[in-house]
Structure formats: structure tokens, C-alpha cells
Length: 310
Ligand code: SF4
Ligand code: SF4
Ligand code: SF4
Image (cartoon, rainbow, N blue to C red; front, side, top):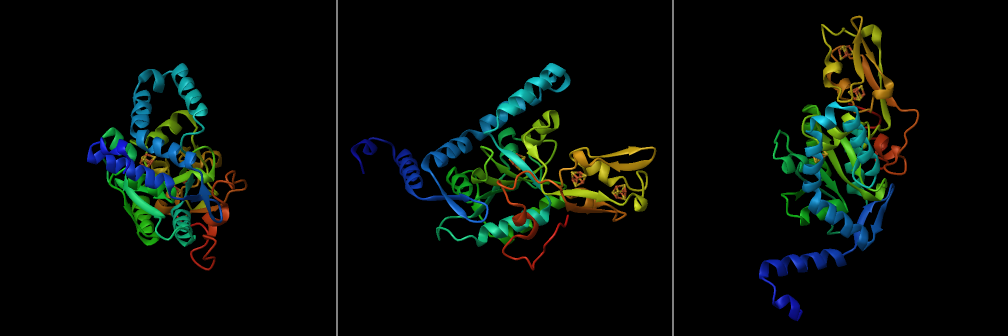
């Protein structure tokens, strides 16, 4: 032990040594079809983000609760400007459950450091930061170096298998939550978490709903057979569940606006008339962040559950 460390209380010595160990270890990130090493600066910057994330979320939540921000044009413009300038902060790609499951299985199959965790789960940081709890709350599935960081931050995260992650994703789907593959710096190498979000608490979704920023459509879009629709009075489930406001009622007929559909699959799940399906979006814009092939087929198991399922 260095003389400097001998003068530091034991609890801090442990933290400092832990920090050095993590810093010196090799860390890997999602690199599309393989694991890629990341630099120490990348790791430290993201660790700092993880450490101060609750403060950032509380600050954004403070803005989101101000009537000036939510109810006036200048306020919304100001928030939109902030969201646009925050391109380095987490942004999310919306995917249906089958795609999120493909991704966790794919990540688990990638070869890397034998002892490094690939998947972990812990309490939703938005709920934790705002102290507003709603079940399921243990739903942030961190991946690769993101798992290392959040385990190290000692926030109650635990290592899980892809099977356990799939079960959590299905539980979140059944609770009406939307899966979002979150990444920083507009790069797949900064993909660190699969979030499962709602519209009441999630800071990312609430910011998106006011600004249209920070959440991107995934590789799917919904297709509706209007002839078989049961109508808004007999059903109307798609209108209620869509977090993105893509479904509306005009003249007692349910319409879906493809420009507003982000491809989460929730309306497919709840459609009582079985009139909906997810189809491949013509232009998926985030191939370099998370490749469509991983989300469509899981790449490693093309004979498995391929194609979109809600
Ligand atoms: S983005 Fe969603 S899942 Fe992630 S911490 Fe916030 S509410 Fe929780
Ligand atoms: S229309 Fe359906 S698939 Fe598209 S965003 Fe809304 S709920 Fe999700
Ligand atoms: S959920 Fe399906 S059946 Fe129900 S209103 Fe929407 S499209 Fe029609």
C-alpha cells in the first residue's frame, strides 16, 4: 500500500483500490457484431455519468415540473434546445420485446473476459433518483462495461443471465413499458443499458414527449388491417396504450400515424381484434448503433424466434 493510502480511512482505501482495479482492468463494449475494447477515458467518463446520473435526472425532472416549461412555447423551445444540445447524454432506440431478447442473448453469446459481467439488473435510476416508485421497478438491464459500472456503484444491481433478462423484459412488456436501448455519444460503443420506460416517471420519455428529442424509432413499424378493427368503443386499446400518440380516433374509426409509430409493439400485444402486426421499417437509421440484424434475428440463432413479435 502506498504511504498516501495509509493515511486514508479504511472505507475510502477500499473505494480507491476498487477504483484503481476497475480502471486498470480491460473493459469491453458493444461493437455491433463483436465486443470491442474501450479506453480508460471512455470508462471513467461513463462512470462519472453513472455516479452523478441521479443529480442530472433530478435537475431535468425539476424543469419538467415547471409550468413555464410544459405549458408555454418559449419554455418548450428552451427544453428542446437543451435536449438537442445534449447529444452526448443517453438517447434510446425503441424496440419490441423479441428484439430486446435477441439483443441480450446475442450479448451473452459474445466472447470476452471470462469473469467480466455481461448483463446485470437493478432498480430504475429514474425511480430511485425521484423517489417515485412503481412496479416493476427492478428493470434497468445494464450491459457489458455498463454492467461493471453499475455493479461497482453499489446501487443494488446484480448479475443476471440472458434467460433472466428475457423474463424481466417480458414482465416489463406485460406492464405496458417500452423497451429502449440507451446509448451515449450517439455511438453503439456507448450502449450501456436496456431501459423499460413509462410515461409518468421516466425522465427520458417525459423529455421526449415535450421535445420530440432523445428517443428514436427502431427497426419496426406497425401495420393495421382497418377492416378488422373492432373500433374505439368495443376496443380502443391501441389508443390507450401507445406512449407515442400514434393512434387516434376520427369519425369512430381508429387511425394509426406511421410517422409517430416508434415500433414498440405494445398495440400489437393488446389489440383485441388481432388486426395489427409489426413489419420492417423502410429506413432504420441506427444500423451503426445496434445493427438491425441483431434485433431482427439475434444473428446467432437465425432459426430461433426470428421476426417481430410484440
Ligand atoms: S430511462 Fe426508463 S428504465 Fe431507464 S432509468 Fe429512466 S425510467 Fe428507468
Ligand atoms: S403504434 Fe403501436 S407499435 Fe407504434 S409506437 Fe404506438 S404502440 Fe408502439
Ligand atoms: S387495438 Fe386493434 S381492434 Fe382495438 S381499436 Fe386498436 S386496432 Fe382496433
